[in-house]
Image (cartoon, rainbow, N blue to C red; front, side):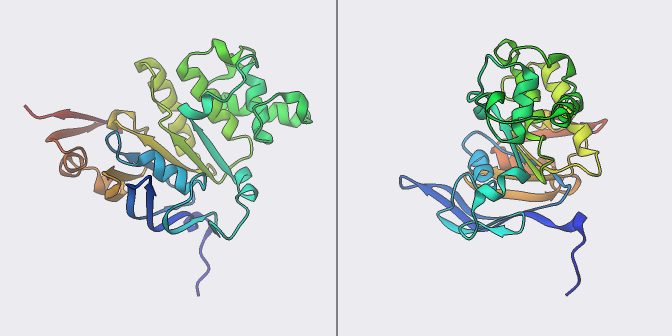
Length: 269
């Protein structure tokens, strides 16, 4: 058997995955793979199952049926706590768990130990603080370092949390609706920061959940489109994201345009 190159390694794999909760089918027959350094968008309407698929892929939610593999390990056959240092996870939900009194830099540095409690519960050296500042800089958030988390806007909080999730240099970064609640300026600043990560040849694989094609950053090269708990289309974004596929996904006739590596969609009259 030929050895798989690191750039081709499969970091996430779902095979025949289904999720049923309280008698309701949330996911059905999901087959999906993410390889090292790929940047995926998971796109679909509300209730499509996007967040649930992300939770399953990151091992924070077990499937009812099917096989989940993350970073070469099979869910149910490994202590997932051993994988958490290699996974980044950020989004609107995790923001609610952060101690608002802490300045942004302290929030970021706690990512080394996956603790939101207080920096005094763990030891951090000069290299850790330098790494935290570097991650804030990568997310264009250096100016936020000394500000209390509770004083930040939604967009600023998201960039701080993503910086935090990068503290362990993860192999894969999951972003669950990271653009939710952002105004246009904040959305564009976050998109620019994510584009920089996407174009980094040594960066992690990234999976971004969103409802809107306008939120897809440049450099994201794959897309999984979902509706009613199923994948409706999946693969390289240039091949898969078409007006027909978008219309099928959202159940409405939609037009699609791409300019300067950004997308725009609108309904036909």
